[in-house]
Image (cartoon, rainbow, N blue to C red):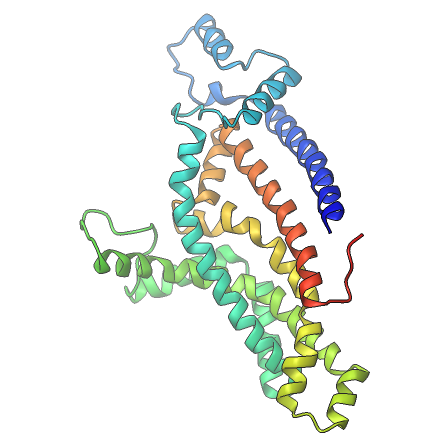
Length: 320
């Protein structure tokens, strides 16, 4: 297995280098630069050119990329162009809210998708199966921004049950259980949006994979031997049927870090997704590049983790 892991790690390193260069090139080829966002109308062209030179924005693109990559290798993610704050510090401030929101939604998605998907596969074309299919179509067809705004209008504006946005209520100086209860109230609506939009794809794959496994010969053999339906489902069909789902779960790892851009923006959630949007609009390349690169790293790690997990779930899988 070690040669396989080493080969995948080398391939991942080459891929990350390519992704970092393309991301850097695309961001720097966008109209304008970071200085133009913050130019004071009273600044003379000479002062603007001096400020751009201080930030290294007057250098050719390859030179800027090599400089950024050199700092990255030394563990320095750089500094925000907007406020001069360390990129590592900025990411650290936003990481907690993003993890809290996305991990909560991910756990709910996995639990609900597995329960509904397996039950629906065991009883195809039943009323429950049709309701599960309707839930999948709703998750796929309803845009997250429309669903989020609808929830805000109903539960926050009309009923007044939940806060409209933010991570916690300002000006209340809460602490202890009261603070976490306040944060939980702020999480309800964004978690509901992430759960509905995330459940559709996983539920559909669970239903189809487990349903396909239930039609295999070894399942019929187990039933012919008198094995109970629960044991057939849990010991035979479920283990093989969930293998394709592992890939989707592994590739969802980056969302824990990068957050959900649309949902965090709608609910003004102070997480990584909103930080990425703000950085792109402000042309704050060091912050945006760091988030993109870390997301790409997590994609590579998530893919590798899913491949290795195949061997755990299915002993027939061998690595060469």
